[in-house]
Structure formats: structure tokens, C-alpha cells
Amino acid sequence: MAGGGVSTGTQVQARPETTRSVRRPRIPLLFAGLMVGLFLSELNETIFSTAMPTVVGELNGLDHMLWVSTAYILAATITMPIYGKLSDLIGRKRLFIAALVIFLVGSVIGGLATSMPVLITGRAVQGLGGGGLLILVQAIVADVIPARERPRYLSIIGAVFALSAILGPVLGGWFTESVSWRWAFWFNLPLGVIAIGCAAALLRLPKADTAPIKIDTWGIITMALAVTSVVLLASWAGVQYAWSSPVIIGLAVSFVVAAVAFVVVERRVAEPLIPLRLFRNRNFTLATIAGLVMAVAMFGTIGYLPTYLQMVAGLSATGSGLMMLTLIGGLGLTTVLSGQLVSRTGRYRWLPVVGSVAVAVALALLSTLDVDTDLAVTGVYLTLFGAGIGCALQILLLIVQNAVPADQLGTATAANNFFREIGVSLGSAIVGTIFTSQLVTLLRERLPADSTGLDINALTPERLRGLGEPIQSAIASSYNAALTPVFLLLVPLLILSAVGLALIRPVPLATEVAQPDLVEVSE
Image: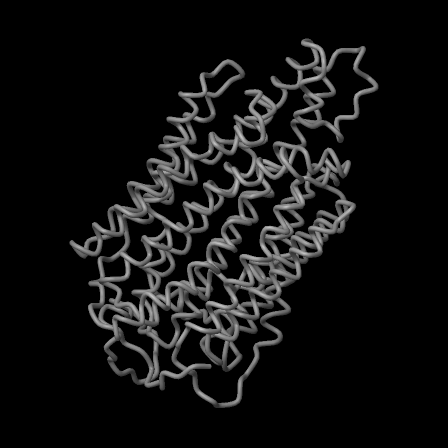
């Protein structure tokens, strides 16, 4: 692939490649199947954000609130490298359909949940399928679209991401207020059936080699242990367990041991889950780290803003979802514009730098919110936040895919998204942990003495509106003081990320599709 190797230093070795022209009439059919599956996956990243206060109140689980999102993210993170590696070895179509089926099984479990543990289990099963959908869509696009033209198609992916993110909070709020939050799960079933039908009928992809598959079993085990340990550590430390407790110390030790074991395993196996030689490539490493940081900021922020808007600004679930349109509007606009710009000029390095700085500025502004801030001002801050993310996110993926050989596209795409999902997990868990622990403390300090009978674990926006003014003010000020300082803590990470991105080498984007010599068949 032109521009696909390491520009200096150690080269990433690849199998002999041949250049293959893509038949353009096939591209719209290909996208029909991919975009429906992507929409399904991304919609469920945000659909519970506006429903969360009602869900945790109905199931009496405020102290388990962060696990509704963390369970999905953790399961998706662990499976991403597995899907990526397997897709390079056995092909992507069958895996794409399997991921959709698993996702729908999780939706059924969640829709039938009568307790928080069952709900969280359903979200985890959804994550086991959802982890493959985004990876496989991105890898399939890289299979058939040259890097120079790819930003246009990545911008379509970004637009679908923005559309699903727009509809997610709105649908979540509408379901919650009109029928039931359970329809956030049931809604997936017809959409999933359509996605499976499109994939089965329309996807025509290269078939991989028929050589025996070598599964990196120990790599999978050690990776899963490391990821689980670090997410549990971020979620529990200082909230459910003291930092000095045996559980937290044990998780820290488990993470270190599992991470070291994973590195040792990956250096020795024939088909590593995440080839460590990828990290000798400066562009791959810097873009991957930047993606992780961006995910920490993005999901650490948007995961709890709808709850904040309902409990502090007094918006309904639907209203808070509509308010998030400002963020998604900025994201969608700059995603499309940046893709068009890169396709026309071939220049891409400056966009993620600008995006990181914009996100840092937006986070600093969001940290100044208070209970009296006008919603229009909040909307401006969220628009800037989304615009920064849109400038960076898809371009970082382009940088990664342009830095590796074609036969490692699935693995590299999965590795990049794996570390991005680590950022999602850490962002959601860390922000959720700090927010939840501070909120519980502040509520206990600020609630009037005559509110001792109030169960803060079962507090919903509807119940809040039925309480007296002193209690309402105490709760709103507690939510504000618990969340807004967290935004400022994220600013230094974005500044460091921008500095690192400035060091990326401008490798020319490939103008032709280069793939291993595979036969195009219907799997």
C-alpha cells in the first residue's frame, strides 16, 4: 500500500500484495449492509443516557448506575482485538453477522430485565456483539476504498455515527416518557433483522486464506484479565472500596501481572492478537494514544451530561436528549467537512491537532457551568466540544490504516479501537466514579434535616419535581458541584495529546486499493 509502511525505522512486514481495482457499482450495496449494522451499534452507545435516571430509580440502583454503560464498554473492548484478528484470518462477513446475532440476544435479555444485575448482564452481552460491529465496518471500508478517497467514506461513517448519536438520546427520552425505557432494547430487534438481511444478501468480500487458524488463546486470556482489572479498579476505587483495601490492591496487582504477561505472550506467539511491532510505527502509536485520550474526554463527558441537564437544568428526558443535538451537530458537521478536505488536498496532520485543542477549550468552558447558566450558553460549549471531536476521530483512524500493510488492516483497526475503548472504559468509569462519590457526599451534606426519609438511590427527575424548593436546590447544586470540576481535570490530557499529534509524519495517502492476493467471493 502506498504510504502503508513505516516511513523510518523498522518496517512492518507484510505478505506480498497486489493492487486491485474496485468496481464502483458494488460500493453502494456494500454500504447498505454496513451502515445499518453500524447504526445499530452506535445508537446503543447513547440511547440510555437520557433514560438512565428513570432506569436506576425504577430498579433501585443508583449505586450501580455506571455499570449500565461500563458493562457494555468492557465487553466490547475485550472482544475488539479478537474480532479484528479473526477477520484477518477467516474473513469479515460471517463475523459481522455473528456479532449482530449476539447483540440481539443481549437486547432480549435487557428488555426482560427486572433488576439491575439482569439489566447489566444484557448490556454486557450486547457489548460482546457490539465490539465487532464498529471494527468490521471500518476494516471492510479499508479493504475496498483507497486511503486518499477513504476520508469521504469515513465521513459517511461519521455522519451515521452523528445521526445515531442524535437519535439515541432523543429516542431514549421518548421511550422513557411515552412507553417504557425497555423499548430502548426492543427497538433493536427489527433493526437487527434488517442489518442481518442486508449483510447476508449484499456483502461480497474477499475470502481469506484457508490455512489452519492459530488462535492466540493466552493472549486473549491475559488481555481480558488486564482490561477487566483496570476497569474494575477505576470503577470501584474510592467508591465501593477504599484505595488501601485488599480488593483494590489486588486489582492493581492483577492488572500489572496480566499486562506484563500479555506483552510476553504477544512477543512469542506466531499470530499475536495485537502485534507489538505495530507500536514501532510512530504514526500508529501517536494516533492510537490520541484516540484513547479523545475517548476518555468524549465518553467521560457525554455519559453524564444528560443526567446533569435533567437534575440541574430541570429538563425532561427528551429535552436533555434534544440539548445534546448541539454536541452532535458540531461533531457531524466537522466530520463531514474534514473528510472532504482530506480527500481533496491529501493533507490531514493538522486536523487532529486542531480538534484536540478545541475539545480542551470546550472542557474548560464546561467546567464553569452552574445552576443558573443559560441553556444557550451550554449549547455553544457543547457545539465546540463536538466540533473538536469531529475534526479528529475519523482522521486518527485514517492515519492508523495508512500506516500498516493491507493484510493487517483488521488487526490494526481493532488495536486502534481497542485502546480507544480502553479510553471509553476509563473515561466512563473514572468520571462516573468521581461524580458518583462526590454526589453521594454532597447530597448527604446539603440535604435539609427534614429529608432523612428520602432515598437518594431511588431519586428520579420526576420525583425531584415533586419535592419542595429547599430539597430541589440542594440536589441541583450537589449535581453541579459533583460533575463540573471533573471536566477541568481532563484538559491537560488533551493538551498533551495535541503536542504528540504535532509529531506525526505526513505519510502520503494511498491512491489505489492494495490487498493480499485474495479471491472475491460470497461467503
